[in-house]
Image (cartoon, rainbow, N blue to C red; front, side, top):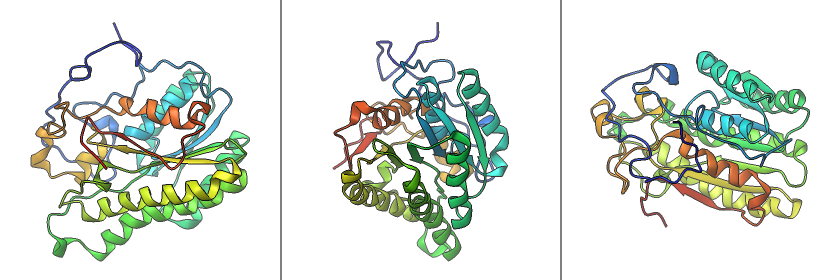
Length: 298
């Protein structure tokens, strides 16, 4: 029997402790080709109407964390615009299918948000096709493992910051004219913001910056009735890990160093994004909600 997120279970064994084989995918990677497959909540997430009538834009919504959030939002009654790279179309269409099966509107919007023009156009298209916008989830990210600083190219450093930080600035700024009182912005940061891995220098630095941006922007937008928060995932099994996000030889033990002893599945993150988007979190602003299997953070 498929269990939902409300079923009482042991968190250690709720999902299997996976030992992924060494594998490689070209960036950005696909859920379709991941071994083992991820759990995005398609068969388990049960909504209770907490986002009924809401209109959400989610970046990186084709796979992994973004896909799990999109599915959860649809199950909670929201319409969703999905931002993703054109190369990820096969994954995106699968998520679109699931959202529409929930009876919600799904708007696929392929494009590269590393371009300021594309990022701004994305927001305009989402607001127009959804008939408004009141949730923005800045989730898309770039992560490439490099062992030595001497091998970290200027091009990769700039590209990581453009995708992970500049795009949030462009998208959020473009979204503000559309966001009504009560709207929410949720940014995806990472445990890397607090405990950076030596092979993820550029990625970890952007995640720390996202934390800071979230807390500053939350204070600025609070008087306008717009809440800004962040979610900081730990080691979650997604295509990001096999498209050079981790050294291949470390994949079999990925996530096993957490107190729970396993990597997380994307569906385990979705309730955090639902909570921060819903009116239930009306007094929560500038918060970074850590979902990391028990790793201590400041």
